[in-house]
Length: 210
Ligand SMILES: *Cc1c(COP(=O)(O)O)cnc(C)c1O
Image (cartoon, rainbow, N blue to C red; front, top):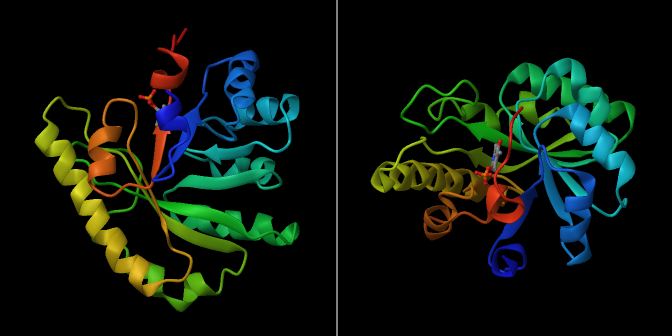
C-alpha cells in the first residue's frame, strides 16, 4: 500500500468515502495528506473533524447548490462536468477571493456515463469566456474507464484521454494533472500516463453500502 501512497511518479488520492474518520486518521498518521470524497455533506463533516493540513479532493458529481459549502476548503474539484458548474465555482470562489483548482471530467467510457464532457466538445477550454473566469484554474482532466473485465477497452479509453491531455497541456498554463485510475485499473492508467490515481478499496478495504 505504501508504494501507492508514496510514489514520486504519481499522486494518490486516498478515497475515504463511507469510511469513518478513525480510518482516515490511520492513513494520515503514515504521512498521507490527499483524501477524496464524493458527497458534500460527508466532506464537510470530515473536514471539520480532521487536521487542517489535509488536502481534500471532491471526486463525485457536484450539485451547483452545494458548491458554496466546499469552496472555502476544497483543494481540487475533479468532477467539473458542466458550464453551469463552472459558473457557480467561479462566483463562489470570487466571493472568497480564492482561485479554485478544477479538473474537467471527460466522458471516455464506451458505456453510457451520466457525467462528464463529451471528448469532442472541449474547445471551450481555449475560449475567452473561460479565461474570463478568473477564480477558476483548470488544472487538467479526470476520467473513468468502462466497468468491464476487458482490459483492452479500459486501456484504449485511458489512451484516448491521455492524447487529449497532451493536446491541452501543450496549450494551457498550469494544465498538468491527469486524474485516471481506481483500485481495479490504476496499473493500466499509470502505464497510459496518468499522474493522479484515486484509490479507495485498495487502501481502506471494500465499502459496505447500507
Ligand atoms: C469511489 C471512487 C473511486 C475509488 O474507487 P475504488 O474502486 O474503491 O478504488 C475513484 N473515483 C471515483 C470518482 C469514485 O467515486
